[in-house]
Image 1: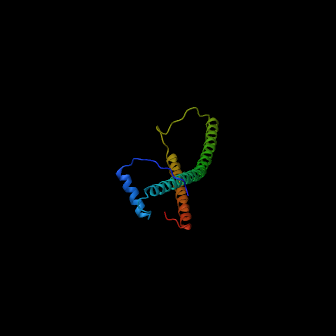
Image 2 (image 1 turned 90 degrees about the horizontal axis):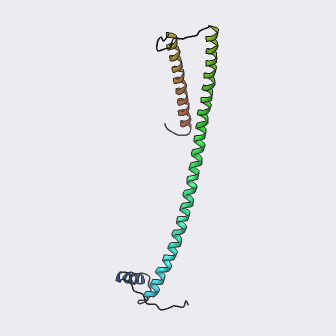
Image 3 (image 1 turned 135 degrees about the vertical axis):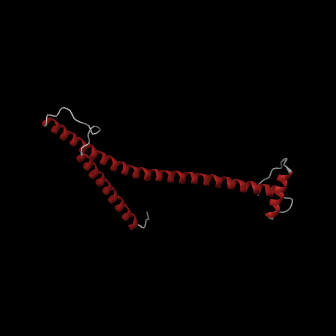
Length: 158
């Protein structure tokens, strides 16, 4: 049996009523407020430890989920950036080739000045712009169509 020490404590009537109700609900012999108070304190200690464990687990799970989401996002973003970078490199290379070809043509033709399109826009330039615009539109439609078919294969709806 645990050795008990007698102490004198002042409590509000509300606290005493709570202890008395606890004693009744838990079949503790009447008049054993001290036993009721000890059980209340023991339950409080267990609950405090449990709350600490739940808080710790909650924090650990939250951290793990956050790291997983960050990793997935980084991987996805990295793949998309790689596609953009490769496309940009291709455009840059083609643009440099065109500049070199145009420079060679201008030198070969001994042309020292040009008329810009805001002064005169030849019909052949409009035709070429339309062809390029259609080509880009068609490529986008093919890409969208391919993407939609891939989504339907996996049970996704667009």
